[in-house]
Image (cartoon, rainbow, N blue to C red; front, top):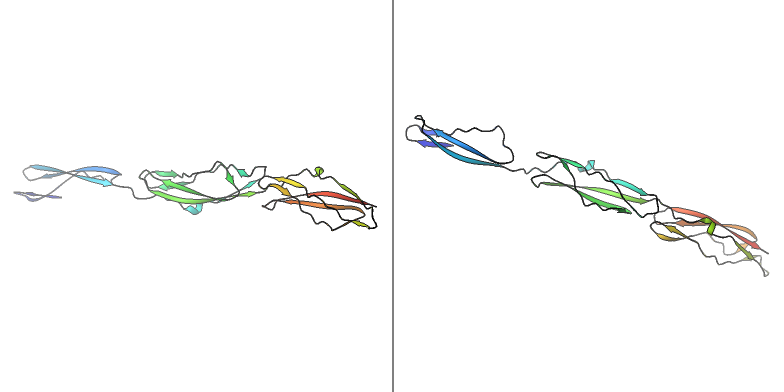
Length: 212
């Protein structure tokens, strides 16, 4: 800035100026000195604000697929928080509201990166949980059946009760099988199949013996 002087007309102010200004307030003292060394001072405040949000390529945050292989229907995951780069605060670790366990299907996590000035960047990450645990049943509990033909027929119709398996997510799974309308003499092997909603399957065999 310039000051007016009675003898030297315009006096350009001088100050000790930094090469760059950091965040916050900086006070500059301008000094105006005429040829007779008379001086006047004025202060000027320089305020620097950070309006630059943390930078991250959201595509670098890869989706995660986890498999449940035990008897649970949820899974605990140890997820590493991603980091963004910031102009002032360097590395910014993302924060997110994470559940203690993840259920079947897709869960979207929103990572938030906040610098010291309150600038925010967000990225999403998909967590997919798949059920790979097959229904459980002790096949030995499916007893063989012996039936007797006592009339003039050579085949017999039987009403069979489908066995049930336990599943980690779908609870009770009733077995299915291709059952004939009637059973002939001798042994017939039935294959019971227990399939949960994720397509995991367990099979058990049952013998049906027909005697004349």
